[in-house]
Image (cartoon, rainbow, N blue to C red; front, side):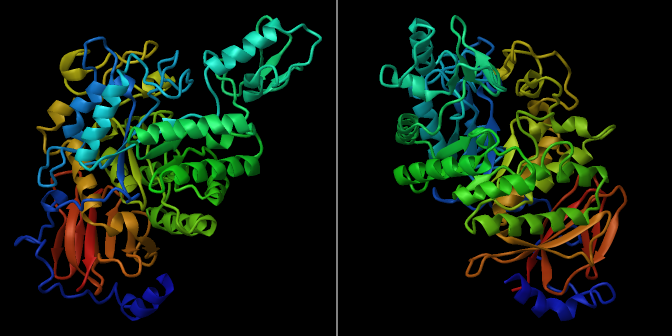
Length: 553
C-alpha cells in the first residue's frame, strides 16, 4: 500500500519545494489570522473494549495517591484520581484523557516495589483490599479506561509459600540424599543445585543453591514445570475474572537466561493460555534488549512489546530532541521498525514509551531546558503508532535519577508535602530533592505548562485515529536536521483519513510549502507563545512546533 501511494503522489512531490499549493478553502481549522489552533477543540475518538490502540498511563501505586494518611499510595487513592486520568467525558479538557492504565505490581510483597510476589491472587494490604481493586476496575470501565496489571512470572519472593515449602524440605533432607518432586512438588517449581553456579544463591542451612538472577530475594521459577504453568494459568484466570483487560509481562528476556528461543517459546505458551481464557485480553511484554533482539519476541504472537529503542536518555526520541540525531531519523526509524516488527508478527501493536520506572526521568535529559524540549519529546512519543505509554509524573516534568527509589518519587499533586491532596511520602530510601517544574495544581492554572502541553498532545493522538493506527511513510526530501515530515497512512478500508505530520525539532523557526495532497490543518502543538500559521500555502513552524494536516477530501 505504501508503494502504491507513493507512486500516485510522485508527480506532485517533485515540485513541492518550488511550487507551493494554494490553500484556498482548506481550513475550517485555520483562524482568520492564519494560526492553527491547539488540539483542545478536537473531540477524542472513543475506543471500544477490544481496541489495543490506546494511550496508557503507568501507575506506581506506592507513590501515586495516598487516601488514608499513612504516606503510602493505595488503590482508593488511584480511584480518587480517576477523573484526572480520564473523567469519561470527551467534551471536558481538565483530564489527561488516557484510556488505559497499567498498575505496577499490586500483589503482596516484602518490598516497596513489589516485584517479588508472595501471593499471586491477593492485594498487598498496604494498597487496600480485593474489594478496593474491584471498585477501581469497575470505575475505570465506566469511563472507558482499560486496566492491565503487572504479571511477574520470572521469579517470586523467597517468602512465597512455594519457595518456603521447598526450602523447608531441603533443610530437613539429609545432606547426602537426593531431592525429589515426588516428596515435595514445590522443589520442582524452582532451579535448585548442589553446585555453586553463576546466578545462583546459597540456601541458608543447606548445601543447596537456587537460581536468583536479579537478587537473592527473587528465586527464578522453573518455567519448564507443568505444575508451575498450571499455577500461572490459574493466576491469569483469577485476574481476568476480576475484570482486568490484560497483563504487562515483566522481564520476558529473563524467562530462560541466555536462551532466547526458550523464552520466546514460553511467551508463546503464556500468550496462548491468556488468549484462550479471554481472546480480547492484551499482553505487553518488557523485553529490555537491543531492538533486533526484542523484535524476535514478536514471534511468540504477543500483542505488544515495549519499544526500548526510542526510550530513555540515549533513545531515538531524546537523541533527536537534543540534536544528536537529525530530525529526519525519527520518521525513518519508525518506518524501519514497523517493517521489522511486522516481519515477525503482522498483527503486532507497538508499545512506544519515553520513560518508565527503571529509567531516569526525562526532565534531567536536557540541560538548561525551559520546558520546550521536555514538551516536544513527550509529543514525539505520542506521535508513534500503537499503544503509547506515559509514566505517571512525566506529564508534569517530574525529576528523579540515580537509585530506583528516586525514579519512583511521589506524584507531585500540589505544594505542601506528604499528605497534601494525596501526596505520598515516597519509597523509604528515596533521596529528598526539589522538582524543576511546579506541582500539577499550579500547572493546571498555567496555559504554558508542561501539563497543558501533554494534555493537548494526548487529545491530538486520541482525536486523529490514524496517528495511532496508521503506517509511517517518511518524506526525506522535505526533512533534515531540524525538520521531520512524514505521512501516517490509514489501513485499507479504514473509516478515517491519512495525515501529514510536520515537526520542527530546532531552536529556529522553519517555513515549509504544503503538499497538494494535504490541505486541511487539523491542529498544532507549540512550546512557546508563537503560533503555527498557514499563509499562501506555506506552513510556518516556530521552534519545537508540531503540526498535523489531513488528507484532502
